[in-house]
Image 1 (tube, rainbow, N blue to C red):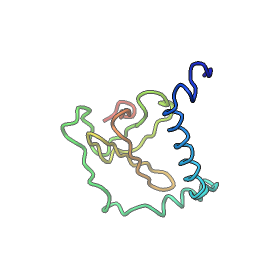
Image 2 (image 1 turned 180 degrees about the vertical axis):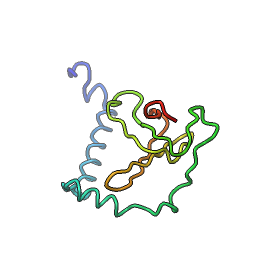
Image 3 (image 1 turned 90 degrees about the vertical axis):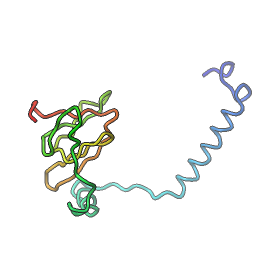
Length: 129
């Protein structure tokens, strides 16, 4: 923005906050662990090392009053409702609550994906329920 519209002199509090915020970010970055690159199989192994036993996970409930009327085990897709909907995660429905959806994706290993209900769509794959 041109300095005659937005400047430190016109908005000293905003610029002060931006300066404090940047200092806090720089301080955090200097003490945070540095990310390291991983091969796909190494990343999968790392994720699997945190996998909980199936019977110790959160309650697996599909709300019977949900207007989408899905049953547990239904093959569904979960994707953002606005932008980015070209990538869709698909798997078997594990849990469906008013605020969260959980699906189980099978591949080389089993993985559960959690997504909020707000801002995401849940649709049956191929219209099947």
